[in-house]
Image 1 (tube, helix red, strand yellow):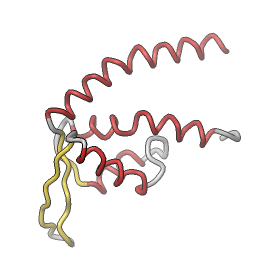
Image 2 (cartoon, rainbow, N blue to C red):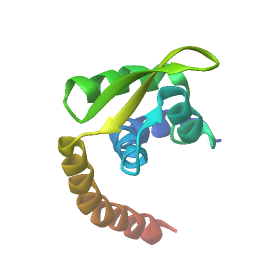
Image 3 (cartoon, rainbow, N blue to C red):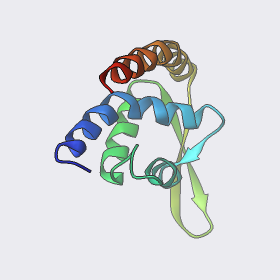
Image 4 (cartoon, rainbow, N blue to C red):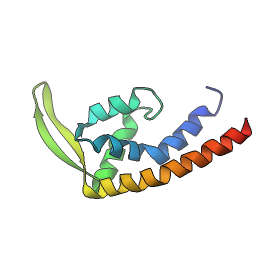
Length: 113
C-alpha cells in the first residue's frame, strides 16, 4: 500500500462495515468470532476484532440485531447474532443506496485514469 492507504481504508470501513455485518446476518445467525473471521479473511473489510464487538453492541442497542446466548461444546457459552426486522429494513435501504453511490464513485475514478 502507498502511504495513506490505511487511512482511506479506515474511512471506507467506517461507512460500510455495519451493513456488511447486517448482510452476513441476512441469511441466518452467526457467532461473533465467525463474523470476525469472515469479514477479516481478506484484511480489507475488518482490520481486527477490536472494532467488531463494539459495532455489534451498537447494532444490538440500535435494535438492528438481536442476540441469544448458547452453550458451546468446546468452551464457554457463545453469543449469536441475528438480524431483526429493523436490521433488514436498514440493510435494504443501504443496498438501494449503495449501487448508485458505487457507480458514481467508479465513474468518477474511471475519468481519473
